[in-house]
Image: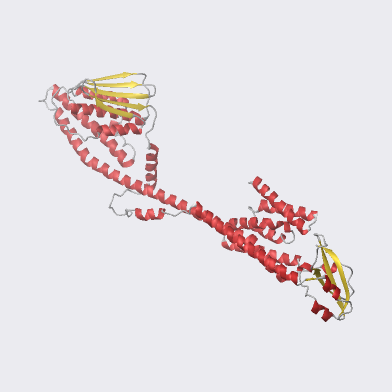
Length: 547
C-alpha cells in the first residue's frame, strides 16, 4: 500500500510541476508543492478530513496541488464516518478554498469572479469524487451487512431444523423404549422363569438360557440406541452391568459365533493376518456385518453350516460370511428387506464396501471391506449439530411437540423471502460507476465552458488595436477618451499598470491589452496604458509585461 501511494504521489507531483511551470512558479515553490503533495497523499487515509481542508486551502497558493484534490475528495467521502462529519469537512474545505483564493487574488481580480470560478472547480474536482466514493463505500457496507444477516438467518434456520430433528429423535426413542423395552422385558422374565422349570431337560434348559441371554443383549442394545437417539451419546451402562459391557466390535464377533453355536448352528470362525486396531466406526461396522449375515443365514438357510472369516490385509479388514444350502425345510420368513441395504450404507460411510450374493456351489456369501482408519462421513457435522443443540437447550428442560412453552413453528416461506436478497450484478455496479464518472465529466465540461465564456467576455472588454491607441492624444478630455475605449475591468490586465514605466503622480491609469500579439513571445504581452489627472489624459504608454 505504501509503495502504491508513493507511486501515485510521484505521478501527481509530475503533473503538478507542469502546472507550476505554466504558472511561472519558482523552484522553491515547486519543491514546496511536491513535498506538500506527497504528505497529503500519504496522510489521506489516516487524516481524511484534515488533508481535505489543508489541500483545499493550499491549492490557491500552490497550483500544483490541483490534481490531488480529487484524490483527497475520494478518500474523505469514503473514510469520514457520519453524514454530519462529512458535510462539515467538505463545507470547511470549501470555505477555506474560497477564502484563501480571494486573499491570494484580491489585488488582481474581482472577488465575485474568484468565488464563482472557485465554487465550480471545487464542485467538479472535490465534491463529485467525494459523492461517488461515499456512494461506493455505503453500497459495499450495505452488501456486507446483507450477507452477514443472510448468514445469521441460515445459521438460525439450521439450528431450528436441528432442534426439530432432535425432538423427533426423542419421540422415536421414547416409542422404542415404551414398546420394544416392554416386550423384551416380558421375554426376559418368562425365559428366566422357564429356565428354572424342573420339568425341562438339560438340552431344553440350555436353549432357554440362550433365549434369555439374547433378550438381555437385545435390551442392552436397545438402551444404547435409545441413548443415541435421545442425546446423541450412548447411554451409560448400569453399575451392575459395567463390569461386563457388551462388545460391539471385532472383539465381540467371537461372542456372536459362540451364541450361534449354542443355538445349534454349525459356525466356524477363522482369522488370518496380523490383527490391527480399527477406528470405532469401522470396528462397529465389522460387528454389524457379521451379526446381520448370521441372522440372514438363520432365516433363509436354517441348519446350513456357516463360515466366518476375518482377514487383516495391508490396508483394510475383509469380513466374509458364507453359508451352504439350507439343510432343512424353509419356513415363513419375516424380513424387512433393509438389512443388506443398511450394511452397504454403513460401510460406505466409513469408506468401505459390502458385497452380497450367491456363493459357488450354492448358499449365500456376504463380504465387507473396511479401512483401518477412516471416520464416518459427516461424523464431525453430526457432533457439531449435537453440540449446538446442547448449547441451545442448556439449562432449559426439553418440552415435546405441542407442549406449553414450545416456540411456534418456523415460517420457512418467510425465511426464504428474507434470504432472497437481490445482490446487484457486476455489470450494474460498472454501469453506476460509469454514470457517476460521466456526471463528473459533464460538470467539469460545464465549468470549463463557463470559464471560457467568462474569459472571452473579459478579453473583449480589455483589448484594443494599435489604431485606437494612436487615435488618442495626450491632453484629450478624460470623458471623451473613456467613451472611445473599453472599460478594461479584467483579470487579464490586473496589476499591469504597475509593471511599466513610472506613472504620473496622482494619476489614475487604464490598462488595455493589444489585440495583435503576433510580435510577442509566449511569456510576454503588449499593453497600452492611459493615465488621467484633473479630467485630462496626461500620459499614454505602450510596453511589454511578463505574464
